[in-house]
Length: 293
Image 1 (cartoon, helix red, strand yellow):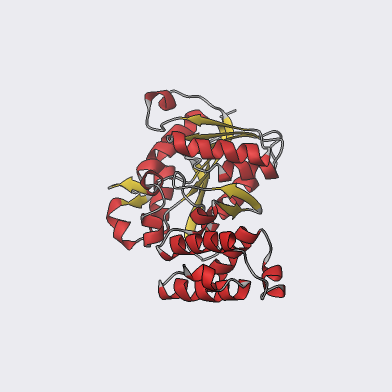
Image 2 (spheres, rainbow, N blue to C red; image 1 turned 90 degrees about the vertical axis):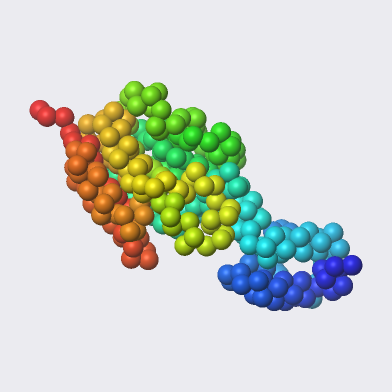
C-alpha cells in the first residue's frame, strides 16, 4: 500500500506531498502539491483548506500520488496537469510544445500594441508551438486574421486543439521557415510575431533540467548561432509584411542588442529593444519601411 492510501485526508496528502517535493528540490513544493490536488479533486484552493480533514477516496489519492511522483522526478507541473495559463486563459501543453513563460505573455502584449490602430489586422506567428501567442492575439483582437506556422506537426496538433477548445478561428500550417516555399511566400501581414529558438547549443548545460529535459529541443536551441533565426526573420519580413508592417520578436537577453543590429542591417526601421518585468532586454520591435510616396 502506498503512502497516499495510508492516510487520505486532504491535509495529510498535501503535507506529505509538499515534504516529498521539497526533499526533491522542486520549486514551490506546497503550491505545487495544492495545484495537483485541486486538479484531482476538481476544486479550488480555498475548498482544500475549508475541508482539510475531508477524506479522499483511494482512487483519487492514488492518482494524486502518481502526479506527485512525476513532479518529484522533475517533470514540469504544466506537463503533469496537461495545461498552463496564458494571458488569462487555459491552453494545453505537452512535450511537443514549449511551455510559455511570463516574458512570452509580454511579447503578446507588445504585439497587440503594434496592431492597436489597425482595422482587421493580418497576423502571422512563426514558430507558434502551442499557439499561445496566435490565440491570445485573436482572443484580444477578435477582428484580426491570424495564422500560425510551425515546423512540427505534433506542435500544430496541440495548437489546433487549443483553438478548438477556445473556439478561436486561427489557421495553422506546417511550414519550415528555411524552406524554399517559405522564402517565396508573400503574406502582406500587418504583424509578424515570433518566439524563435534562440539558445545556443553550448548553453544547454546552463538550463534547468526541467527546461532542458522536457521542452522540445527544436523550440529551444538555435544551433551554434543564436542569431540564426533573427537573420532569416528580418530578411523574410520584407516579403511577409506589408510596407509599414510591424515585427515583434522575443529575444535572448544576452543577444538582444545583437538581434537589434541584425534587424537594422536587414533594413528594418524603428528598431527597439524593451525590457521585460524582470528588467531583462527581451522584446525586439521593428517595422518594415513604408512605401515611398
